[in-house]
Amino acid sequence: MIRPATFADLWGLRRKPTRRIFFYSDALLASSFHPFLLALRSMLDPMGASTDQRTLVLRDHGLRGYLQACRRSNKREVDLQFLTAFKRAGREGQSDGELFYRLIEDMLKRAGSHNIERVFATVGSRADDVVEVLRQLGFQPYAQQAVWMLPEPALEVGSKIVALRRQQRRDAWAIHQLYSSVSPRHVQQAELRDSTSWETSGTRRLLRGSERAWVLGDDQALTVQLQLRTGSRGHVLQMLVAPHLRTEAAAMVRYVLSQIHDQRPVFAVVRSYQSELGQALEELGFVMRGEQTLYAKQLAILERQSVFLPALRRSERAEGAIPTSTIGAISIDGKAE
Image (cartoon, rainbow, N blue to C red; front, side):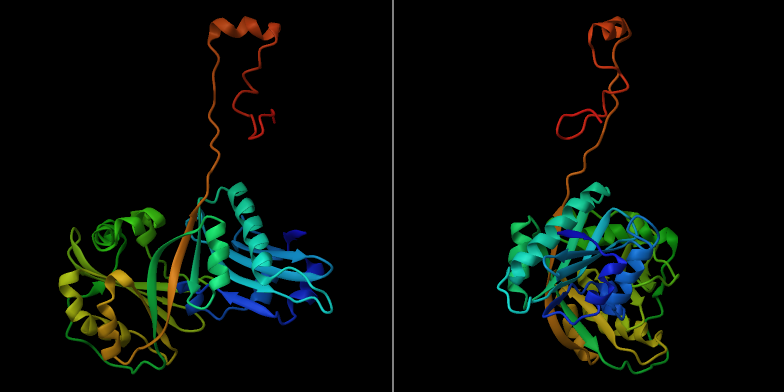
């Protein structure tokens, strides 16, 4: 049985699982992730309210596994975050892959009922069975990226790149144009971003942290955007750089590092179609920590449309016609709600 976590599951959720998978999105990289605390929070404030967290547990003669997911700020998209499996003592049961399949499949059904349009998963290179599960459930890989880390950034003052300025609200459309010019078409089709998705929020939020960004260029034509997400664990840097400026990326990143005033690690996420930026990071002391594949699944959303009967047919209601108030409230199986 799969259901949302309840207080009756608290003891089981504190146990150490035999297998656990982290889906390290940029938000998760920046934050100290505590699955138990997030499960408790989701019980107090379930998805659809302010926390946007969901924890699903699978029970079969005891706790067999659980999954955690989080809505993005636009409310239409969800990131998988954490997946676990527990062995049953003295019993042969389902494999980890089978447990993962059941949990993710159930989450997809629930997401669709909450008007979620897309579900994303960021998968490391050592999770072959998880990749197979995602493939069977219809997830499609759309990009690869490398994760770099600078353990302790050296505090530097100033930079010769004086043209970089803080991103403002009016820059969102120009950043979206830069994204469209840099990113391959299949990536854009998978992510379906719009200009509002580039607006930053300085307000710190659970797991998502706070955001700052810098841009290069005028209001109509930007050539660089550097976004820094800060969380309890560290900082995550993401970059959009026009091809002709990638040789100058080291100086730009150095400027961003000068705006960091603590010794927490800095992660930089570089997608394969901007792989040249890795050389700039290596020059600054970053070390590659691993590679990830980004997966996305589009969910079908049932949209209801009102249907109006012509005025001349009103008299037909007495002869068994369906009332106007019922039309447009027909469920998927064809039954009137």
